[in-house]
Length: 55
Image (spheres, rainbow, N blue to C red):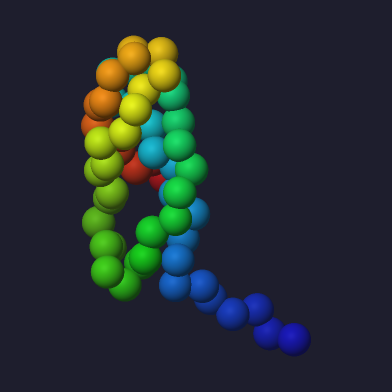
């Protein structure tokens, strides 16, 4: 059975504040080819901050 290439990739989002908090999510390679930036809750900083995609 041949391995098929998935359209959705697993990506890791890391906090921009430098606390080391990470989220794991998926994104579509077809719709968002550039790096993903989401505003999510940082448990250590106790506020919503930008999380950028790391590779």
